[in-house]
Length: 96
Length: 319
Image 1 (cartoon, each protein chain N blue to C red):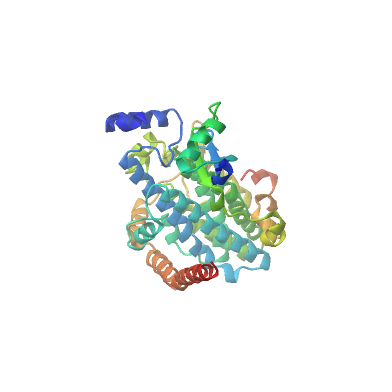
Image 2 (image 1 turned 90 degrees about the vertical axis):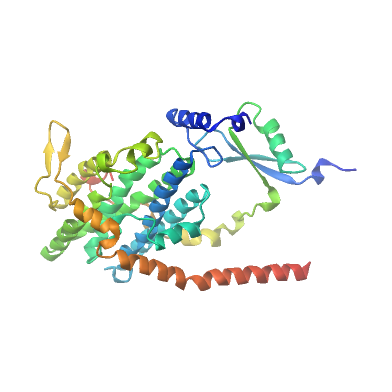
């Protein structure tokens, strides 16, 4: 018997308003992209939450793992000079 | 779906209404061809500026006076490469490829901020570039966070957030020179003398002479005019120069109580057009270097391709 979990999983991203980024809101199973888009509309925008939907096959998403964070991000941790607050300027000119 | 039945004039009205209503235009929206072209021109020019702008500063990385200054300068130049990437990618959503944009730069068809055609002669220039050139860029980019094209506006939010360290490190390094020996003070003053006017030129021709300004304002690609932005930059920079004890090389610079702004002298427009049309001190060098860097990097691109093919073959074998 075919079950919907045999359908591929899609990740759903919604733009709540023009000018804003699409944000991940959840996922769902669908047979193809078009169906995923319609299900996403029915499921995630019932209260006009969005003006645009992106659907992406979950299997197409490549993600870094939090457990790898130490080695993955380590080089960034010892570079405080990348931050504006690292530069102490006198009060009179501190508004830049 | 109704949109598809509209004729061009109706589509254009929907488009302009959207802009008048302060809504953003997003990549898949209908837009007039001229809007698209105008944006591609401005955004590719902006991205090229970020990338070409790495050269005058990169010139000093190996000669920075301390390890601290070297790390800061490296981080800043690295940021500029990143900013180029954000803007190129945002421009690609308009249907132009990175290769086409870079080709237009190499062919001299696309411009970049003409200030990067001036040489960085001393260490003080690195400070002056951060303070003045990044300072001027920030004034412009802050308003571009509200530009009408969504991907461009969002790229600008990111750029502005990262950019404030650029200006502060430049000013901080000049502060050291300005409170140093007589020679160091003179070096800081000399840098200001050479970078002041080109910084004012960064905002482009006067509003009345600016070829693309009026249409860009109507489309809200630009949010403030060249002259407004230039005035804002002068007003914010004069007190910063005073604090450094440096003199801005403009005898006409004077606070105007009535206007509530600084008055300042006229830009040498002959110089402006000379440099923009390819005859500044470093124009040829900048493009030759960019081409060379691009060509010298060919083996990296080829290696990526080769690695990809190898990986694919390996996966196929395993399957």
